[in-house]
Amino acid sequence: MAQVLEIADLKKLARRRVPKMFFDYADSGSWTEGTYRANESDFEKIKFRQRVAVDMTNRTLASQMVGQDISMPVAIAPTGLTGMQHADGEILAAQACEEAGVPFTLSTMSVCSIEAVVEKTTKPFWFQLYVMQDKDFAGRLIDRAKAAGCSALVLTLDLQILGQRHKDLRNGLSTPPKFTPHHIWQMATRPRWCLGMLGTKNRSFGNIVGHAKGVKDLSSLSSWTAEQFDPKLSWDDVAWIKERWGGKLILKGILDPEDAVMSLKTGADAIIVSNHGGRQLDGAISSIEALPEIVEAVGDKIEVHMDGGIRSGQDVLKALALGAKGTYIGRPFLYGLGAMGKAGVAKSIDIIRNEMDITMALCGKRDIKDVDRSILR
Image 1 (tube, one colour):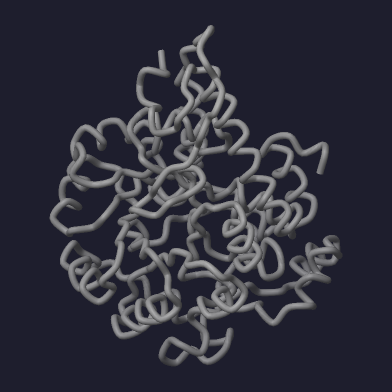
Image 2 (image 1 turned 180 degrees about the horizontal axis):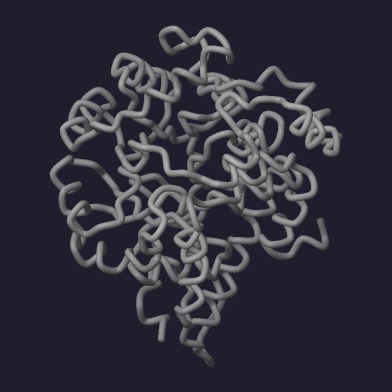
C-alpha cells in the first residue's frame, strides 16, 4: 500500500490480479479507442495558474451534488460487471464510498443486486437505470430502487445500441461469460481472485436474474440482454421515468449542447456530460472538451456533472474550473477494487482527494466552491 502513490499504480496491480477478460472489459473503448484515449489526453492540454504568497490554511473540499452533502465533488460512476473485478465488488465499493462520504452509483448491470448492497450498507446510494424494451421490468427496477432508499436515479441515455468493443470480442467475453479452456486458464493464473469468487454467492447479474421475465438463470440471460436495450428510447420516456421515480433524477450521456438544452424540458435535476468512457461512439469528442460549451448552453438552469477520463485529483479540479458541479470516477475505483478490494477503492478515493487538495492550494484557493476558470491559464 505504501508504494501506491497514484491511480496508475492501482492499474498495474489490477492488471496482475484480475483475469484478462474482466480487466480488459473495464479498461477498453470501442473500435479504435480514439475517444477513450482523448478522454484522458485532453486533460493534459489544460494548464493551471500557479499562485504564491496566499493563505493556504483551513482548506475544504466539502460540496454538494443534487442537494446531497458530500466530502468532495466526486461520485463513483456506475459500471457494469463491477463484481467481476473482485468478489462482492459493488458491496465493497459502496462501503468504501460510505466511509469516504462520496456517492456510490450502482449499475443496472451490476453483479450484486440492489438488495444485496442495501443489506451491507447503512447510507443511501444512487442507482443507474438502463431502459429496456420490457418497460414493466424497468418500472420494477425503479420501484426496487425506491424501496431500497436510493437517493438519486441516474438514467443512462447513450446505450440504446451497444458500441463494438474489440477487446471484449477478441477475449470472447459474453453475457453471461463463457468459460472455455482459455478463460479457465486466465482465472487459474489469478488464484487470489478465484478464492474470492468461491467465497461469494454473487456471481450473476443480481438485478436481472430472477427479476426479468423469462430470466431464471444465467443460461437464459444472454438472449434477453441481446434484445432488451431499447433503440427507441426518447425524451418522452424520461417523463414517465421521472414520474414513477419521484426523486432526484440525473441524465447521463449528454455530449452535445442541443441535447443539453433538450434535457432542460425533462425537469431533471442534473445532467452528466459523458461519452460512456469512450465505449460507445468512437470518434466523438472527449467529455472534458464538450463540457464548457454545454455549461454555456444551459447556464444555471440545471446542475452539470462530468464523467470520462478522470485519472487524478487534478483532472477533477480542471472539470470543476470549466463549470462542472460534480464529477465521476469509473476506472480509477475499478483499478483499486481489482488491486486490493475495498482497501483499494478507499485508496483510489484518497489519492483523488489528496491531489485535489494540494493542487487547489497551489492555485491559491482554499474552498472548492471558489474554484472557477481563474485557476486556469
